[in-house]
Length: 153
Image 1 (cartoon, rainbow, N blue to C red):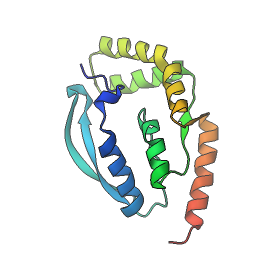
Image 2 (cartoon, rainbow, N blue to C red):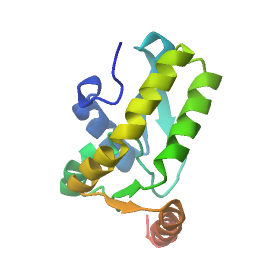
Image 3 (tube, rainbow, N blue to C red):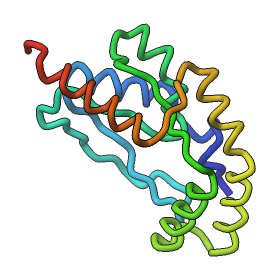
């Protein structure tokens, strides 16, 4: 079974290309996955529709921090810090509702991720992200959006 939390399941170069295309043109092509099949099944166009900035999120977003900073497309790098039991419960409810895998696979995987959660946050911090609460992340996002909307085009 594919470990979607492993950097080996992810294409850094494609992700960086997508981020820089979004920053430069406001649109890019993104993959579409079927988690139940553990496979990429296609792609779709993602368009910012004129939004002044975008947020890259997910377990691998931290992997891009240094490259985004060098490319001049990084506004900030934050890692959401929340109680891991809440993360476990939300992930399990989502994955069960979407029938991503058999229930016992989801429970075992969820418990493994629950145990590894402090390591993930530690790695994201080491890669340049600042751990932050959901409330602080929302405040920072509003600040960035206000600043970006005031910049001349």
